[in-house]
Image (cartoon, rainbow, N blue to C red; front, side):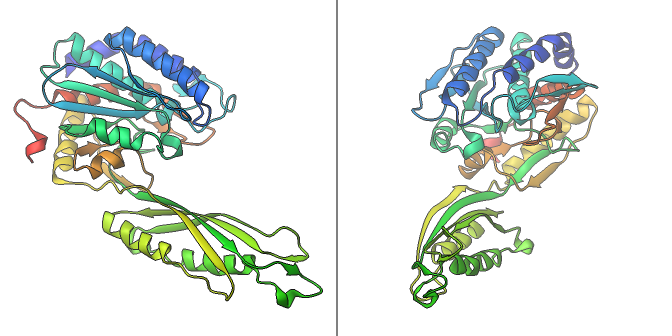
Length: 382
């Protein structure tokens, strides 16, 4: 591992420059033109550092998705990451302070993408790649649930020996992510009957009152022992204070730890019934990401990562986290998937988002070491 670390350390300033360049290309998920401009910057970095051109998956609404392939034969190793961010233009400023680099998407997850490029470059330049086929999948819409990319990711990753996701490490520890909750998004529309709140309220059927019943029912589905959470994050209803509300709407978020629980919860929510006579309900939405569950093969992948980290002089653990990523999709295919291999830092989706610059080289070396693996090791057969 020393030769890999030495190579990355020697190119440390170039790695930092690439991170700054990619972060400076702001890419809020909802702005296709901006995301595509960021994608062009990413393409230029891939061309400059690895000599790779993009296979573009064009999109009419979201930004285009990008695939880069190094090697034509051998077992496929997929590196997965997104280049859209949650930040609108000008929300955050790129700056360096006390060994930390701040900026929109620097932690989630542009530094991780650059680390992945340089990890593979180190292996390429040191002639350590062997016959592995490295595929980078870079999508443009992860922060809004990957609506246009999740099927593309599943198709491109199918048959991979394993998938490494360069999302940020666990905050505060640098640990990797071996399991993630699955998520669902639902909208419940409620229709009642309007009436004058003073003259003839008895003729009305309040959609807002029904909404209150449904919020209590939905929050009653929370089950901490199972790791199940249900949150009504949006509640709107009514038009005027002197009118019995004839319409209301709820936005519902669900999180589950396993596929069976996701299905159980989905069946309950899709069977929801009105509490009040005369109310009609319309439900839309469903499960948006399957749970990422740890398997025997992904445990072996974690053990490999821990061995590499120990050789590099630090320790990591595998943790289960609540938020989802695109690794949920590849894990659901039965592919060994290890997440959290990107940058370390603080402030995911927060205004203090930053990475620790001192960790960039060690974490790029960690990724390179996992890809390097052990001779004869085959996770597909575990």
